[in-house]
Length: 128
Image (cartoon, rainbow, N blue to C red; front, side, top):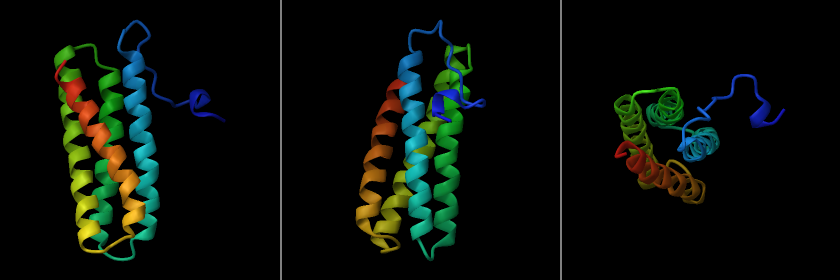
């Protein structure tokens, strides 16, 4: 079953001209969440950082999904701001894991690149 046919997939309002852009950022958040799972499996210590990374990555996707269902522009912006903050937290945890040698840097680099792209896109969406 593909992502488009999943019965619980987030539905973005089709009457919204920004629906495609939001779908893209949501898909990025899901891809980042998958990368986080791989990183979490590789980390053998630092359980508090693993937990924080997992929770923050989840918040990113959840808040983007919540923004998709909002009709109020102000509430959509607020949800994107919260998602951006959570993504920034994820970037910081990835940096900490790298500095503390908690996981192979080659595993972190693609996730960090993706989360920084998410931060930039969410900053753009929260400013609209």
